[in-house]
Length: 280
Ligand code: F3S
Image (cartoon, rainbow, N blue to C red; front, side, top):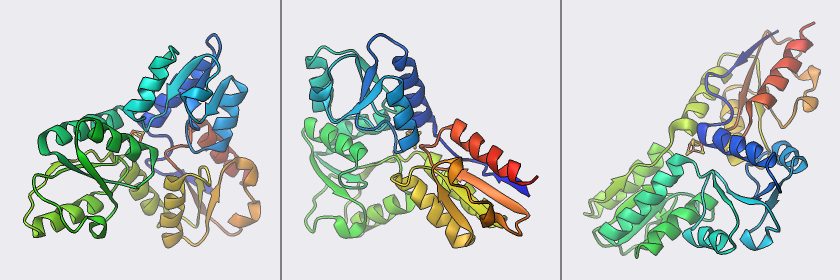
C-alpha cells in the first residue's frame, strides 16, 4: 500500500509559530498560560500542559508565569488586562491576523462603518470587531450577503477573517455594489486554508482511502474531512495513529494523508509511519 501525503497539509505558518513560542516558554521559569487552548488539538494541548503551559480562560485566571496570546489574536481590552497585571506577554498573534486587526482599525477611522466578513463569535472575529470599535467604527459581522443590514450607507469598509473564502467576500462585495455602495475592501484572507482544501480535494480524487488528521473540535479539519469524503467515500477523520483500524484499508493500493491547520508535523509523521507499517 502506497501512502501519499497531500501537497499542503498540517500546521500553517501562524499555528507552527505559536506552537514554537509556547514550547520555548514551557522551558522558562514559571511556565506560561495561554488565553484559551492554543490550538484545537487535544493531544497538543495535553502535551503542553504536561510541560507547564496551561490553558486558562482569561488574564484574571493566570496565577504565574507568562501569558501567551494565541495565533488568532485578542481584543485590545484583553491585551490591556494582561499588561495591567504586569505579567510577561508572549504575543503569538499570527502576523496575518495582526495585519487584519490593523486594517479593521484603519477602515473604522477612514470609513466609520466596517463590515467584518467572518464567523460571529470566533475569537479572531471578536478581535477584529474590537479593533474596529476601539477606532470608533460601527461594526457588523456577516457570513453571507443575507446577513447585511437592510440599511447601510456609504462609506463602508470591509475586512475579512483570515480563514474565509474569496467567494464569501466576493458575494458580499457584489451585494453592496448592487445597492450602489462601493466598499473599501481590505482582503485579509490567508491562503493556507484554501491551499490545504485544494490539496486535499486533489488527493482524495486519486486515492482508494484517505486519512484526515486533526482535532474533532477543529472546524478546519472537519471541513477537510467533508471535502475528502465528497471525493473519496473511504475517508477517516482521526486524532491520533492509535485510532487507525487496518481493516479500513482492505484492498487499497494507495492511501492519502492530510491534516488540518492545527495538526503539528510530528502527528502527521506518526500516522504516516503507522500506515506504512501496515504494508508488511
Ligand atoms: Fe495565520 Fe493563516 Fe494560519 S492567518 S494562523 S497562517 S491560517
